[in-house]
Length: 488
Image (cartoon, rainbow, N blue to C red; front, side, top):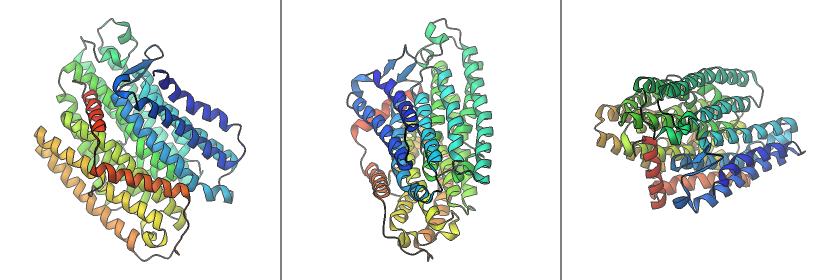
């Protein structure tokens, strides 16, 4: 079973190499989809034996998979599978019309598979230094996906993303160095910075370890889009192509937050308490809910609106991490639910932008009539994002409220409810004319099989998990939540 971990890394690399041999534009996108489906197959094989096979190690302990990384691997592959299917529809006209030439299509798909590889490395790395390398590599690879269409606005957004996130990742590197400086153990695994050994080590210098977590939280939090270091995110998400925006919001932000979870587990273990990390999680979580609430009220661009919504939902996940084991459970469930809803919303925004020739909210009207498929997708995605029942985000936010009550976090609960209430009203106000207003686009009857497939699949999953949470999934989430807390 441990060989699966190596396969997860080899498959995207094989796809990058094979892309150099292809000649037709559409074949690049089919190759990317095939490689992601192969990763899905590896995960399926692993899922059938997860109760007995986790945790697993390979490569002399450098690669490691447990319930926490396994959960994020599942979410990642769901987002990449949906994005790869949607890309067939999204880039179809650009390929046919020559706006996307063969060289650009090759570059896009090699970068797409490259980003899959870097994020997989981040999740599977047992060494916290290697995990940092994986997260830094995601910045370098995904930056060029933002400007795949080299408009001035896209290039500006790319540079803003590169500069701000590189500074953030530099802070995270200081965090890794401070973890090393805080060690007083002499086990070889500890000196190699293996997480599996660090989580069992004793004799940490608590002051240095707390400082390490602060640097890691600010550093990786910048990449996760947490306020107030979120300023790169609206520009990058709004300028990137639809599938890339969905991948950014649907998983890349989660990958950065995963790194913070690993560092928090070390601190909680060393201090035998989660009080230090919990206060910081609650603070950054509430900031990331309230600040975008103010910006969402005045947004005029659909993709920027969704970008600020991503900051809000990453804030909700971060808040949950500060609310104990029940909060960690709610956060991890919310990770999945937000990834599905935000991917669906960005897919709809991307196609509506192509159809209307703009992402300006005032010029997108009557989508349910003119483009029924993408109107339904936008409606489902936005209704899910504002937490309406029976969509699954309602359930994870309900668990979040229960966790806050159980923790006695009354002030945090009130701010959380006020923040999501403001966003609920703001998004609803923006949504109604886009869906039911009178538009000037003639009704489009035809929809591609790939577009229909991805919309139906994501809507079905959002509704299914809003009604029923399978017991094996519930148990697996409990195991992952215990690892995120670091006190199991």
